Length: 326
Image 1 (tube, rainbow, N blue to C red):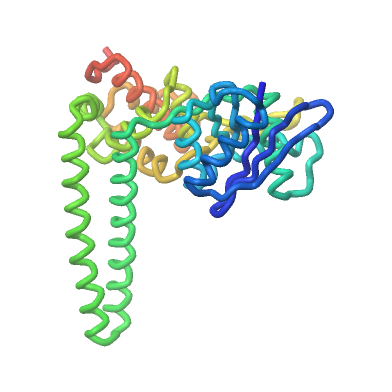
Image 2: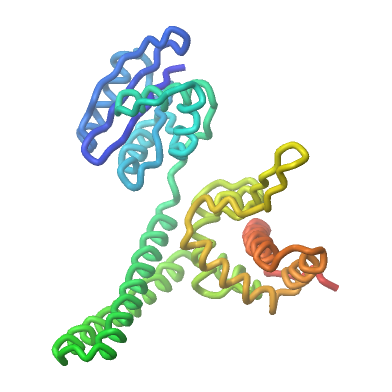
């Protein structure tokens, strides 16, 4: 198998073809992280390996946004692309004693990981989901700016600053609130333009505890990847319990893994707070866990996980929420 590890940064991509895992025979090269550099990388790999793109396996870390254009370019060229969590690569490198950190060393560790661990193939998100995620991200950023400016206005009012400063903050708030409303309209228009997403949203909002904001978030998560089961989706969002036990003496409390997007978890937390009051299934589970001695936070974490699982089931079966509580 032709395995090429890629260490991606903003300006360049360090590539290493691991020709032999045992002897550590390699061939490496550095390219610019540009469209031209991506094409040059593909041509270099084909020329040296003497194979077609579909026989080459490119392994890279998920490095913010810097890997995305390269991943799409290689995928569209017909190559096999793997985008791996950096934490997995780091732990793997430490497992066989890699202590130094250089771009070339990183690409070697990534290539070895790909050659020995059989990571999952990467597939691009549907274009309508990419657009939805971008709109949601911008909407959230504007909401955060509104909160910051509101905090500044409160401090300015209490602190007795000049009127010009208060006017400036109030002007900014008016503009930000107008932009928030415009983005809300764009998000709703996006759903109207994609009937499948609009139907998903209707189904999710049939679940007590799931409102417009959480419904679109869950669509952006569940439809972005090919999850095979609800627990897999919950794990992706960092909602699975992690235990800390050893022998007969160490009995640490379980906690949520908290992997993935913290912002989505924060919104799911608020949705779960509502759900334990109004969603029969989640309310029953929450009360049962409390009765069995679980802490409120532990029971609430289970409620978040259950809510995600219900969302997954509703979309998978394309049927509205139906309570299982008699």
